[in-house]
Figure 1 (cartoon, one colour):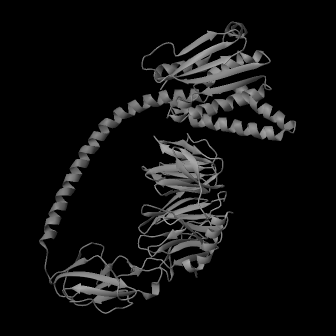
Figure 2 (figure 1 turned 60 degrees about the horizontal axis):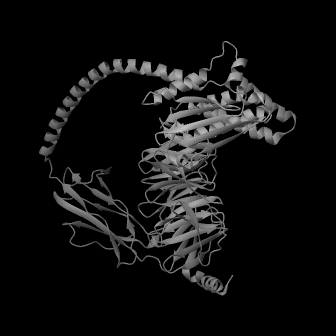
Figure 3 (figure 1 turned 180 degrees about the vertical axis):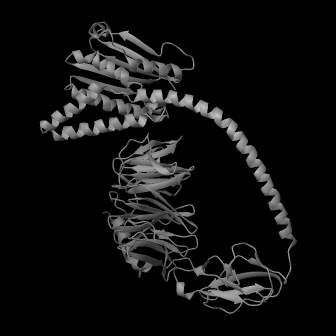
Length: 636
């Protein structure tokens, strides 16, 4: 450490005690996570999955939550709880549970879609349940996380950052170390890794050097709170300000909890089951944050914005409250009901007031709160209209007549709608039946797989196990199961990403190579421009040609070679497959008279349906010396 950094660290260590005061709050049970609510209070999550509201003085149970929940986050007006059995969405007005029998790592809602990351992959909530995303085939880290930064949606997984574009997740940047967290700070995206901080620039990760921070520190979490960057890692919590470049160390033990900042300038987090508050000397000296007003008339709670008391002489009870997390027990209130009151009533700690026998008239109620009697927070005014006894509003007659008319109109419209639905349903049913037959035939053909290939693959893996070559056996079992899963996934879609097709043929060639004792080798070359674009092709379109190259080409020689070149031709993709096998003429002599290449014929038919020009040259063969070349033209 040079002299400059040493002096900085010495200065910071000398001012830490003056900077903040650590306070541990009593909790009803061990807490694991927390978030801020709109009214200034805290929403906390316990180890048993229960939700509490903490107003600075006491915890109030809100919901039993969901068993096994480990974290709470806030998206829009809902709090999201993730657990080993699914997702719970909670708000003061509703509770929605979305079951998923896997541990959930991260959740995000965007453009009307809800995504969840689990150990087995990425799921999309659709048709009332979570369904596996077909075009996501990568393993998922337990630290994988979704983000919404600068109006864009991102995902970090292992050492890669993905960006959501055109309906799918695209690779944006990679690092040499695992990515643990991301945050929007100083008009850029900052990244926490296993070896220091990075910032995203020009789709690349650039290392960030900060005085007082070890450049190789394992950073677990990042939090941006009112222009300050909080850095959590290696059992430390550091606060850094980009304006004065000061780094401050906060008294902190290891915790997976979110770090939040309240409106009074203090920070909070869950630590070893406790709720920790750090009171800063430079906190915001502002008044309490007022909560909503509840009004009851003769014991009945009113839900309308404008309160109407139907009969004078009624009792009106008004309940109110406020939050001040720094000084919760010092809050006092004053009420004003004008024109009945000419000035605010005396300060009180009571959180309700009752007005008896109010005379007919128009009133406006408001209250204010304070902790010192000099700085106040004012509520929004509420209008209260008190009607004279036996006064019947003409409005009720108008509303009644309007409701009757609307009811008649709705019944007539519903009758015409049902008549139209019955006529169109018959035609729709006929069209759907014809379409289903076509799709069923296509999906059945896609699911076909040579039974000899399946038998040989499983038999070869069994041979590896018998020879005690367990590592190789495990490798090919994973490859084989991934390929089988891809075949099942392909049966439900018409098109897939080009990268997904490449992954599939790599698995297929790897298994074929293993079953044939590595008697051939292969290479796949792809134009970089195709991988960066959103290119989609029909699933399993190349596999029949590769199978032909193996069965009727290189299977009869000892040192076989297959190359696959995928080339960008702007309006189409040229896929060139070459082998150094025995050639088409010699292969034809080995075929039986009843041999039919059904898969090749189906591939040709699918390509012709895709082509707008109906050209007959979608598949072209060329004899090489030795071997065969086939070029498949796939429109995009």
